[in-house]
Image (cartoon, rainbow, N blue to C red; front, side, top):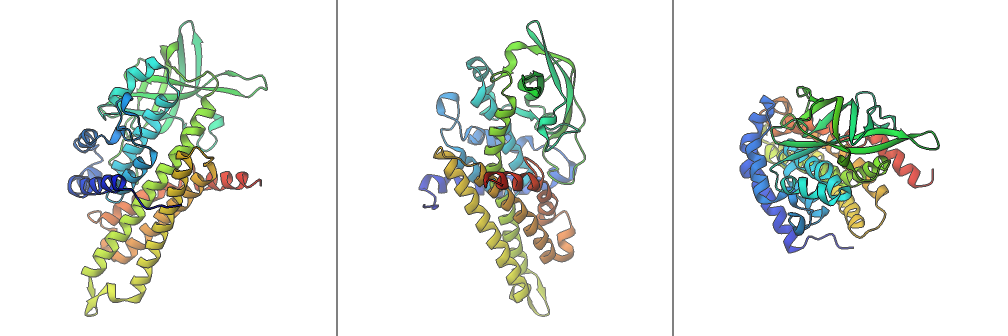
Length: 382
């Protein structure tokens, strides 16, 4: 198995790396501190075609694949995770469900703007009382004539309240199966629909330049035709979406972990103590070597999961391994990078302070570390 990048893949990586350094890096600190959404950056990413990367050209995409998305996320997160998670959620959780499960009419209506970055979409799965236990969904949708009537709430939903958010797809209980379990379905709710309320943005520890809200549905009515995929297949659909998304989150985590290495090398060479750069101290060298080790091994893990996915092989276990190892590596690297920077690592003007604040959510979002271990254990027959 050869994990060396093709010329086209390397060109994409270099293009995104330059964009991240030249366009994102100079402005993201202010957005982060002000908790504002970087619309100007998102517009430029749209012009570059990043929102359409893994979609076919006939749908308005760039004709790439999921690995191209992962490479892009890694390079973005190497500089900033708020922008990276905006793109990841826009594609994996926003446009991908419509592309995978939507009708031709739904694809024609929504994909053109989603794949150019003119519009964003959210994925309403998590609820205030149900996180890892997605089967405990309380939001309900009742078919009344030719409309779904939705009641309930969702929590921590990315890209759900920006000025360019066009819709959210919502998982809801739509009935009861023969075995007595809940029938879960997914329904498209356009922004601005009466009864659909977006709460003010959260005050977050990290990802402070990304958009996250709680959503409320109070007798919210949408056409019956807004059902996404087959009725009762919502659980299976979001499991497929999350399996794919874990590879993308792993790539994002690798970017953060590698960014910690980059910043630590730069600082260690510039910072002098006891008459020499601290990079001369073996304790610092070993810390950075271990950081590079974690980033490298995590990268190989998501490369492997992505390769299996694109080959049409089962990749559930490999995606869980990649997400688990990469997210924990990001947390470890962020902690060590902060330690290397000393007091400066605690100052928000230094990128590692953002990395430290952004890293922890990677062990929680799109499946906690505990859930990943459950998936791996079950796949081993335990």
